[in-house]
Length: 255
Image (cartoon, rainbow, N blue to C red; front, side):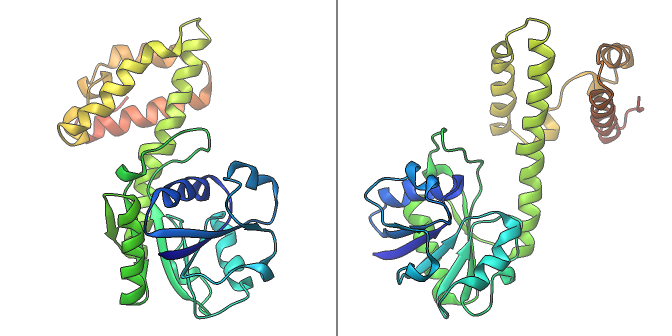
């Protein structure tokens, strides 16, 4: 069994813990967090600590904290020459302190504690300084996911950027759609079939071949009318920016 200590108790650590507990190749021997409050989300059977000096000996230590804190926190770990990895998409492996063997264990998904995920379908991206450590991380990844890949820090940074576009930005557009619908007494759930079908169509081809809408058709009258309907300047700017980007991609004239 691969002995693992989770360093952090946020959303990623919570879902990793659930996945690792289902694996017959990984044993979570401890969860560390500075505050005890977050431990309430984890099974009582797991050993926990709020003290760095009480961290147990393990085969792999997984840092799951905010990106800005990874470098500084890794320097405070009271041991050396251990495999220490982080779960960030945008932080380079070499940002971990060099006193330990460094690596990355990055599951590409959006995580919330109150939302179930199927970890078997989540791609896990690994990186390590040595072949032996890489093989261990690959074994861990394949024990919880059907999709485990080796990529370097530069590739992962670009992948994370792509994820920001297809997840974070798209979710904000869902929010704008929610506001436009609900403020006009239209249930947001009426848009759900459209949202689901738009995502499903990606199974049939690349996004550019699936594009529809007034900007693709160069329907200037519709776009001008919709711009007038929007009352927030920020929404107008987003609408114009995205419409012009679509028009430009398909060789249409901009708004």
